[in-house]
Structures are given as structure tokens and as C-alpha cells.
Image (tube, rainbow, N blue to C red; front, side, top):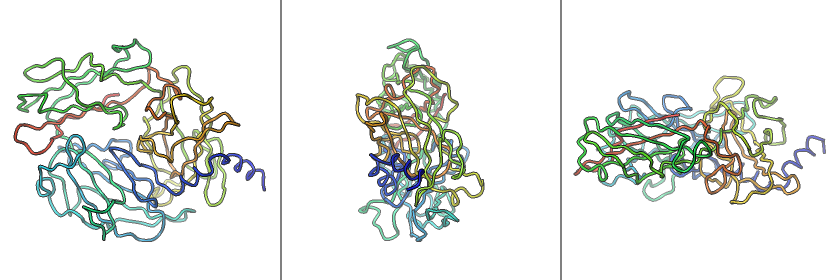
Length: 421
């Protein structure tokens, strides 16, 4: 065995079964944005206007489009169809509207945009779906779920291949948001507090507690979202939420970053690149829990697929087994996971780290497509307090969504949306 093989064998010892799981089971398994059910599907991405850094929010006034893409890990063509559903503010299917109410055109159309990977060690076929398209367009604002099935599947009975979610919003209600490290439980320490106001605009709001639903979340993490908010200030033209302890969030820490552009040389955050048949392997620099705030210009867990060739990254990028390391004594508080927008921000079994007693570190090996990635080490209680720290200076992004259902209406309109850093 060569020295490189010796090293890699040691690296994989103790997490060999998890490497196998990472290769066989896809990522992007999450609660409210993306979900993959087929073990042969990887790298589900949802982009607005072709920009992977934007959240899946479409401004109805601008006529924007959303693109779903994914890889099926072979060169075998699959006849996929898509099924679009309108959902209420809680992501349940809207049972008060008909398909003809929220769609123009026909649902359950065949996906015809696909292309085989070219000159890659791992064969895959890249599929794309753009919405709206000549066959179908969305008519209402609100939450939308797209489910992808095999052509012969029953969309009411069978499990889909995958599903992705996005929102279409109207800019009717105004939203003003402020974030401060001076919270009602600590002062410039480990939390951030959101204060916000919602202006009705031309909405006729009679009972805001019944007619409005305000959702606040941090870094596009739907599992962190706060709902059921009750305004403490009511005016004739709007409502305000101040000194609300529900709107106090753990501040967390800046995301770590890495970039795999070239499988033959290292880039940002990567300690070494190796080939171990049948995959390239990237070992990231080990991380340690932070004691003090460290500024890193990050994208809050966003990922961008790209390679050094800068050609068609969608079909020429390689899949690389990426090794994550957190050097730390075994931590109380439950398992540690690698988290980022690319993992769905939920605790996927693929992203659970194994503790290496001999090395004194947490380790994970995850199959990823070449590109730029941000990530955090998070425990199963959802916090980074022990793995990365909580620092009020952290530059988080907060999203506010305002839904409105007037008396007699059959669906939740998304009438206001705001992002603040």
C-alpha cells in the first residue's frame, strides 16, 4: 500500500460506513425547502433568476423565474414529470383552491431539459426545470411546492423522486426590520433580537391576529422560523413587534468556507486533494471551537457549483468525497452535524459526524459536487454554542414573511417580504 493509501485508510477508519452512506444516499434532505427521496439523486438546487445566492423568493411584480436542477447518478434517461401545488402559510396544501385558480396551463408535464455529464469519473445526468415556462405559470402569490415523479407514478399515491419549495410574494405590506445585539436577555453577548413593524399598505385589515401571519427566520433556515407572533403595538395602518422574546435568536458564528475548483490542487479551506478509487477526496483544514468572534466574509451557508474550467459546471464538475474535521473533546448536548444550505439545514444522517476517540476529533465524509460551500458544525438541539460559539457580532441574515387571508378568502397571500443583514 502506498503512503497516500496508508494515510487515506487511516483517515477513513472509524467512519467507513458513513462514507458508504454518503456515496449511496443524497443530500438536500430537509424540512421546508428541499427534499430528496431517491438514493440515486444528488445536488438539488433551487435558483431565482439563475443566481444561486438568492433565496427562493420570487417578486411577483418583476415576473421572475425559478429553476430547479438535480443530478441522477447515471447516464440512463428518466422520464420525469412535475406536479405543482399551492400551500398555505404552514406549508400544507391549500385545500380551498382549485388547480385552475393558481395555475395557467397544464400540470404534470414531462421534463425535457436534461444533459449527460461529460468527462467525469462519476457519471450523472443533469436535469433542469424552469418555472414559469410555456406550458404552465403561477397565478397567485404564496407558497408553492414542486414534486418530481417518474412518468408512470401516481402523483396522489406514490412517493416523489424529490420536492422543492419556493415563494411568490406581493409587495403590498411594508416591512421594516432591525437587528440588535442588545437583547432582552443579554447585552452584546451571544444573542440577537429582531424588532419589526408591518404596514398594511392598501390591505383592508380588520383583525390582524386572525388575518395576518408573520414568519421570521434566520439565515433561510426554516427549522429556525418563529411563528404565532402577537404584536404588542397596533395602529390603524399597521402593527409592531418590540421586546418580543420569541424574536431573540442565538447569534451563532460565521460560517466556515471551502472551495473545490480543481481536483488536482487545493483551494480555499482545503488542506489536501487525493485520488482514491473511485473518487477524488478533499480533506478540509481542521476546525476548533471558537473562543472569540472571528470575522469571515461568508454567504451564510450558501453554495455555488463551479469548477476551474469555468465551462458548463452543471455537467463537467466532478463529485468529490469531502472530509470535515472538528478538533474537540467529546461534547455534551448530542450529536454534531455538518450544516449548510446545501444540506437542507436539517440534520441529515449523511451529515452526522462520528467521534474519533484516538484522534480526539469529530469527522464526516460527504460526497459533494465541485464548488463553493459554507458550513457550520451544529448540534442536534440546533445550536452552535459548543461547536462554534455564539457571538452577537455575527453577520446573520433575517427574513420576514407576511401572509394575509382576509375573511372569506380561500388561500394565504404572501403580501410582504423583507431581508436584513
